[in-house]
Length: 446
Image (tube, rainbow, N blue to C red):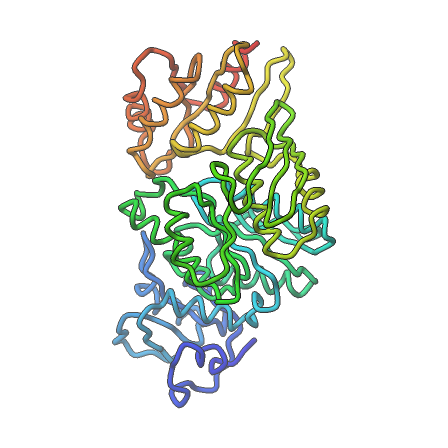
């Protein structure tokens, strides 16, 4: 519990206007208000929290933050701010004692590679005997800490509570995936990042951002949030990364697969067992042996090495952390089938990631056998990428099995029709049920 004055003082509200009220919790949902909570009204994509202020007060809210005028008589104090999302970020951090200031927080953003890079960093830091938590697409993962499913980047209230709870039981480091939605919605504005890393960028989430330029600008916000003494790790092979690295005032560590500068591979060998090579990293040479597959994972390894170097982790600890990083759920995860075929599950959901995965599989396959692909496209998301993904798969696959993949509020037949536009030949089958599509693909694999 905290006083309303403590919570609201950092957002610039006149202290004389703040009554002596204790706040027991925070909420942006009028249905989850408990007696004594502070209700922050947020304009969402589908719902407007300002329409539920009266409900929140009737449910026991002790005070309200809003960015729109509230003209009705209210029995609790109501404070108008310019931007309630920005205010929520400050309030949440303050309510939970600014936990990120007491921890080392690594934020990783980009279109692809965030999860794998974060898992590699987590493994490296654990090999340094540090207590590390992961927050990202797979939820909250921390040793001996109850698993929580979250958004890729949680809302400010959830996020600062998680950081507070982790800090309270001794976690010193947090590796976070930072999504473009989170950056655009001020979810991480008051997280004290020590390291910010950029993996790559290709068009994605244009249903939300509108244009690729807006998407890039959202990603760039992470690097404007960090303090001057923080460090950044940037993929210099990516054109946007190259531009970004020139604009930053923080110390920049670059990594590249194409040039012999920054953090880069001196030697590298790919096989069905993983990646072996040597990395040159700011005067050090590291021996790399990884279970991960493919060229794009070589890029993720470079990013993880760059982050670890920025954190001052010793060379042998980095090497061991990469070696001991097991396969990551849904990231080129491999299973041997009974008939000696191999099933691989991957989270790829953009044309760029489809292309990288298929190139890797083709290289590992050589001239043996065929590749069958079970895939779909999420509803109410970038419609323009659906036919493009089909074009890519048709180039590499013997046959494709189109199945539902979270259609949300969109009709499945409309999604399928847009996917099929990308095929030039009849190399696909459509299934109403994903299980059925998987079974049919396994049935014909050898």
